[in-house]
Image (cartoon, rainbow, N blue to C red; front, side):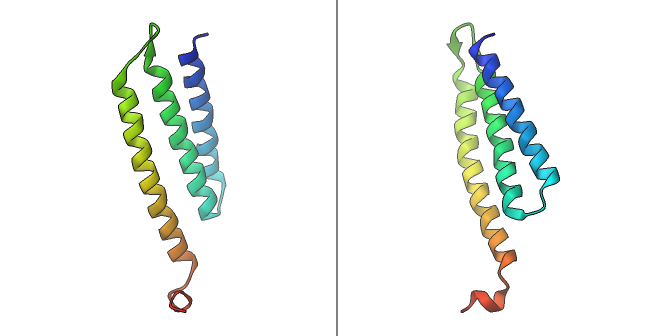
Length: 94
């Protein structure tokens, strides 16, 4: 079993755990964390599949780095929206 395959299988497991969390959990913060876990699994699969014949393909790695930046921005937006929904506007002004 190659290291790339181990990374890909671990990524599939993380993605499945995140998907189960998104489907089964009801709290917004936990769903956001589960969605981040899904993203981490997808990134790990891409990194695992980028390793071939002892070499590394730089294109999937660049895609993963870009995806991490986008995921951080999306998480910040999701947390801000969840906070906005959780705190009524009357209490936010105080």
